[in-house]
Image (cartoon, one colour):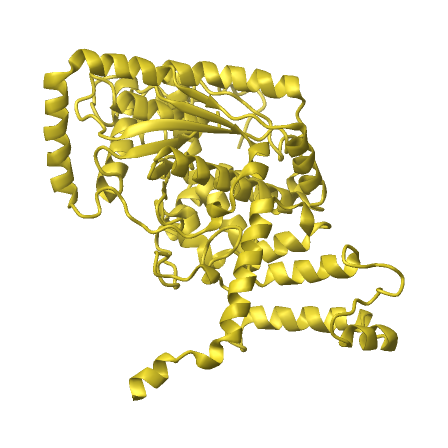
Length: 503
């Protein structure tokens, strides 16, 4: 038993506290400066080699980007996209052992108008980011989000997929690129340097008028929830990037989505009803647009690895407030999912990697989106395959039935039912509602929903004014509706595939 006067100081052993002073697991010589995962301790030089190799291996394994192709880098100023820009810049430098063989460009979408920033704050953020982009020597495009109201309706039209190297294999394209590069270096070394200097000075700043700014404010004020606002912002951002890539001749677009961001996107998209498009939204390549392919080379990096690399090697980034800045966790589905995964990752370090590995196994059940697919089978906003053509015994049809039953009780009054039953009349035409009143708005919303996937329908459901959408979306919707009506009118004279087989 313990004694009162007994001394224990001489018999107690000091417990060893684990420290970071370990040997690098790769070179076995230098002292480790960071620990990525449990047991993965790296020194500075080995961590850089590991980080660079992972980026090159992701591009080399998939072989989506052919030599000589123009690739547009979507940079938001955050840590992931800034790290991606640094990797491309280093891969194209003269000291790189295996140089990258594509022609890069940079695009930044100024979203300050949707986030409530003042003109001074937006100019300050753009100036900080432009200072970083100018040092890269790549051509860059700074496009404000208000420019979406000046887009042509051809943005949403399907374009035939004709990549630059479609007729050649990857190895043949590499050989052809090397031969052309040797010829260029032999004949015009000085001219190439002058061209690089000219490209470094190239920058495009898109301008917008006050009517575009007011239209953007009206659009986001019509969205009732933050979830719908973030979803609409993502859609408009993709349309701007797609239009810029097409008019500038870029066939690939690089996104800086990290492994952590894709894990959050996977669960949030499931909650938003985008399960049918998970393979395209989280995969390495997204060919939904046909002529422009979205690639995600940073999808193997965790946010911790990116933060360590930027800190150790001085990669500059700019913090720009967004829609979800300083909002509570339950403000939106996206914000709640992010908070849930980040907190779970702190206690269980394999959370993000488990979700990410699950996303790698996903494949879409829909046919590939190429030029042979009719435009009517694609969603009007996100351009994914429509998932609303489901069987009667499906969850989607059950949800529609529940909505009709719940709405039908509120609209089952005899006067309104008889008035609405007559063709060409509105329910409140006698009171002077007319073509611009509530009846026409609800009718336009119903017609627009038939062209949307389930997730985009939920976004439109949170809108109070459908006419606040950009003009190119409404024009494309009218074009698709006229095409569907024309097809229905001549359907009696069309031969079905079954009839042709019988004959």
